[in-house]
Length: 225
Image 1: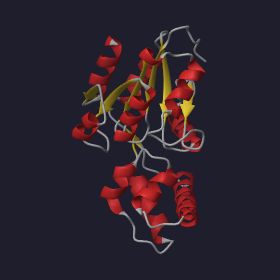
Image 2: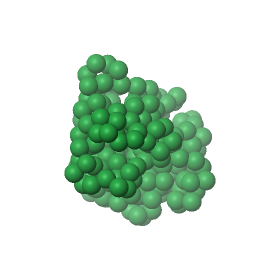
Image 3: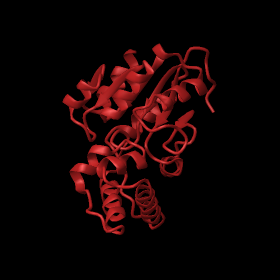
Image 4: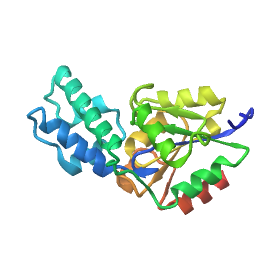
């Protein structure tokens, strides 16, 4: 575990759409969860729009007519389907080009701490870390089952509390408006990435301070902060 300095820079990464391209697994799982409950599957475009939210608010946004009981049922069926795919080695969560190099390079820097803030459950993040041997790279992990859903600032505030990072030294990096809104709500810098699930215009409108087009540009920007 890296030593935590008095005034570290804390770079918090979203997962889905920022580090990994998991849209195919998410869309398939959501369609399955709706279908087995005799609901109309939301499909690719609608599901992409809610990636980043925690599951319950995501399902509620996809179908505003659902009762809380049905939302809970869809969420459980989604989780079960995802777990089965993972256990069968069928989950599709490829790293974006450059993600591995940049994350591993940043993790070596003495004045930088890395964090995760994601709509994934903690179990999903552990699986990602297992796949890439990243358990020592991230000093704080905020997940949907341990913090309020984005865009509530709780994930960022908890990460800052765990690491001792100040607002002016904290950066949120993500691909959706939920990430940008969360950063604004927490009073920290928001960096949008254009390779994920929301457009540049949407990221700008949600308060992104910077938007980058690839991991090389992201790495350079972070080194300049």
